[in-house]
Image (cartoon, rainbow, N blue to C red; front, side, top):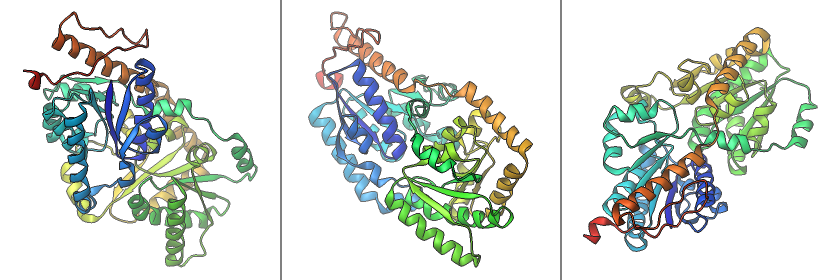
Length: 416
């Protein structure tokens, strides 16, 4: 069995890798090919293109990379035509993935969407694309299946958010934590995002907020979490320019790469860019402010499309603003500094924020999404094989046997 799988962001790369592991447990002979990143490669997938390196967002960035996206769609289409994979699995990253799904459907290859884009929040009209191109939607949030069902997409099931799988299995560097804790000062963690554009837009606000808070609380230690060394260098440049521009001597912001889980565990308070990292912050019950700065025009456009009350996954799960959030085109550093000081100065306020997050963690943080998604994918393929080839075909023996004997599924249209 051969599966084409595509992920376009670091988080999606990790989710895809975990799904590959879960599928391989159940189908040991399965082969995985597609677009993604290093985690997928480590899981045994053959990459046709390192799509994670092209993680982009917003209209202009997509337009500037349009030629590359077209080439990737053409390449995927040729692969579907020549190699006839048994399934296509897409992980988040709408835009490009709609086109890949469309080409897969045209070639008769079933399409599964793992961690589907949040259409209910900003692009409800795109549900038509799901209806026309996706065979099974593997939903991350508990309210999503009903949303799809109400819009004539019955092929939607809830499997849970795969981020909780990764958090359950994650091991922290205890020696690093002990060394850092020896400092003894209160710690504020700054998480400026995993994309270069996110750093460029959000880190100046976060650095300014640190300078403001440091005036009232010079004892606070500020640590900045970056994805890798290239972002670390870029972040240090941004911080230096921002503090010099503010005209303040400014605090020291310690920038570290590859230490996000440890810095979250270490922190007393956090400021973070919106994203799946908010789930990790919830798991640690860490009082956090969420910020997402975009250009004024983009914010004006977004206001027309955003239909949900919140932009943060944690707040969406809670249906309440447990993490104060700012989707903004202006400098909100004063607000961030105010929240930081509130939680650092007032133990009762911090305890309330921590308790609310801990209560949500208890009800919402259920691991096993990758395993449930793998079971649904293989069961769907089993049912399709029975429908196409009849009851005499070799049967899928189910997740308990951890063995799948599936031949390549022929496109019924071409066979006819």
